[in-house]
Amino acid sequence: MRAGRIRLLPERVVNRIAAGEVIERPAAAVRELVENALDAGARRIAVAIEGGGIARIEVTDDGCGMTGEELALAVQRHATSKLADDQLVRIATLGFRGEALPSIGAAARLALTSRPAGADGAATITVEGGAVGEVRPAAGAPGTRVLVRDLFFATPARRKFLKSPRAEADAAEAAVRRLALAAPAVAFRCETEGRVAFDLPAQSRAARVAALLGAEAAAALLDVSGERGALRLAGFAGVPTLTRPTTSGQTLLVNGRPVSDPVLRTAVRVAYRDVIAAGRHPVVVLALDLPPEEVDVNVHPAKAEVRFRDPDSVRSLVIGALGRALGIGAGLAAPRPGLRLVHPAPPAPRPGFAEAALPLAALPGARPAGIAPARAPDPMPTGFPLGAAVAQVLDTYIIAVAADGSLVLVDQHAAHERLTQESLRAQAAEGGVRAQPLLFPAVVDLPPVQAASVAARAEELARLGLEVEPFGPGAVLVRALPALLGPADPAPLLRDLAEEFAELDASTALAARLDAVIARMACHGSIRAGRRLAQAEMDALLRQMEATPRAATCSHGRPTFLKLTRGEIERLFGRS
Image (tube, rainbow, N blue to C red; front, side):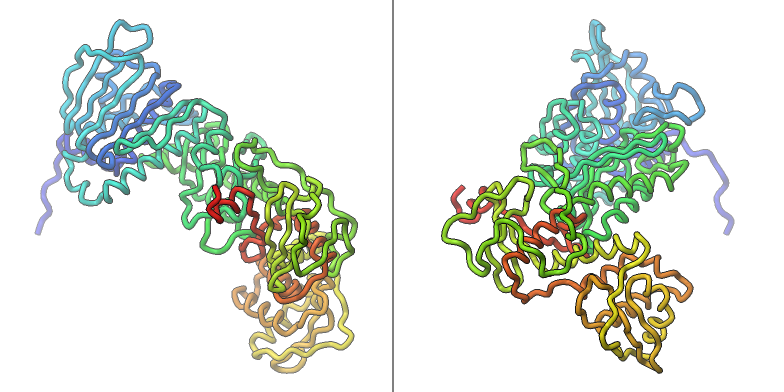
């Protein structure tokens, strides 16, 4: 059967098709309208959402406003004031396509009222399902008020694919939050279903982050900054223990534009992969600034995707900056709520700490192990945020009291695992891990395939302090272990390494999974749960944690310590 003859679609149908690309849900309409307000130079923006944004969206700003003639143009497709030329190279505004207002007008009942500063009065125009009304005089304050009602009434099929009004309202509120984080110098008020979600004055980025993420999250953020040529990165990154089940806690900005970019998301994931548990996602607010010609924002109608001219430089900058921010000792991550986000430098490592194996030399403040003293411990110097050990419980957890009176609980195995991993990593980077020959070489039995894979990488393993050689079919002879592991049993270690090698192609260098291999080794050389520690060992472990990068989590991303403030303890007992 022959297909129908080719014909031009009516303009109203074309507009509705285009509207579906730009405005796929209420959150998209809210985002477009707030971006317009920011481009108009608004200093205060108010957003109100009802019925999940389907019933009503209202955005009011005090920006530059529009004349009646400009209103008539603003609701026409591809009419914009934001492009200085036709090259699409140096785009410095959030909007530039001229599609938002006509797309909303094609799918909803749209009313715009605007008044330029200094004008005697305002003007208004309506668009319903693509039908444009006349410009009429109206009353209105300087700035612009946009009212959207009955979203998708003209395209009812679109409504069938929306989520519940509550879910749509949450998505719209999240879009406003991201833009509020992007423009902290602008006052924002957001109201959903008659409830004020937030009402914020113009403020610093640190204060805006604290206001929108909450006191708990803000108190666990690290300053992030970095430069690479013309690239500038700034913002905040959550400590490894501050994670979310999704990436909803990540706000990524490129030249002030909230984006969902795979290059940036991959860089964040790589920077955190050794310090958070699998399946969890960090909380970050990162702002990348670069020359407009170095990034293409004209990739998708929603403008949420960008394309970098030099993605490798962007990726390296983000990974490096996050790595430096995360490379601090345990307990030094963040101030308490209400304090500025400025973090002290970690105390200088004491001689021998980086490579000492427990037991360690005693430090000042030693107390009897096993039970808490009858009186409160003497206050520790403020340079030791994990405080002084007062007891060990279940031969697994260390109880300490910090200088501010906070209670600190430390998982001794998880903590020492991180310390060992960082020491092994440092030695490997310096040229090779120091080996300790075994008094009697050990024979480890493995399945023939695994034994062959371990023996095949003997030269690479030797640089990690593990000296092995074939010992007949299905066996490996171990002559030396990394000195940092102490008297570890080589058999479980080799079995774990064989599993790691199974995920590598035979031609792939071990360096490709070096961190994973080192993490396996560290786990086998760490203090085990159930080992009784002396007082000096507990205090020394705390000091090492404070001086070791990424010591707030173990190699598997689990926390190495928990800190309970006085307020948190009082809440547990119902005293607050």
